[in-house]
Image 1 (cartoon, rainbow, N blue to C red):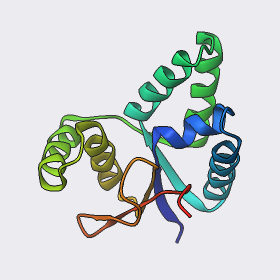
Image 2 (cartoon, helix red, strand yellow; image 1 turned 120 degrees about the vertical axis):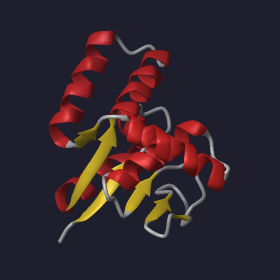
Image 3 (cartoon, rainbow, N blue to C red; image 1 turned 180 degrees about the vertical axis):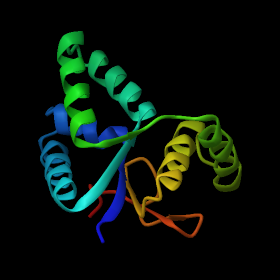
Image 4 (tube, rainbow, N blue to C red; image 1 turned 45 degrees about the vertical axis):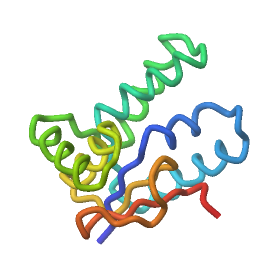
Length: 139
């Protein structure tokens, strides 16, 4: 059985923006590896944050739309729902995380993911006894 993984905004952003060559290469390698052997999830939150990150880096709207469309063809996309928001509020309170990180973790848990890849949270922390945070850029 393949694992279920969740990819944070920073991973898909680094895969498209190459101003940090090491992170760009690592993000591309991770996505290629996970797409070949795992069920890979993102959320509508990740798509929105990705759009924002690329537009701040002066990418044209049409190019970002092209990237988003390609992602939605390759990755499973889960919408942010009221259930996810409610779970996020609980996670935020319990783990003292930001709302946005809690929303991402809540979605990963609802999608029954084993791992979330992000550089923003504590490497190897386990959330709700089910979800392991992995920083793919950690040594």
